[in-house]
Image 1 (cartoon, one colour):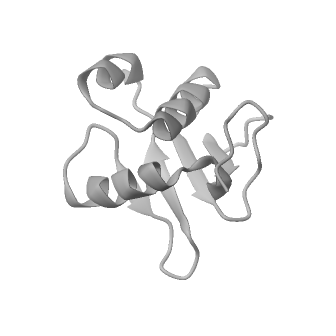
Image 2 (tube, helix red, strand yellow):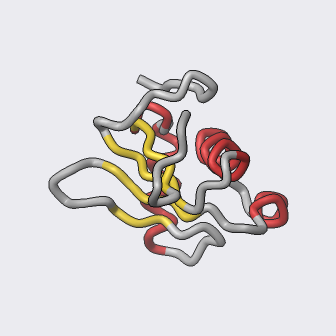
Length: 98
């Protein structure tokens, strides 16, 4: 996938499992090492910050596999953020949960 000029990986919410959605809801209430924000109340989606030291953080916290896959994919592509959007791109290298 080609990187856009805002350094945000835009991908579909089909890459988020039910377990990951529950984790995201909990992450908004707690302070996890990865920032998670609601995209909008009207549009289902989230922003996930991709930390520069993600490999260290991933060893310290328990993440659902869908979140780990997204963080790893985004970090490998040099992205600073992942935006999950219902109309976002399906990534062939990531699992799909429907």
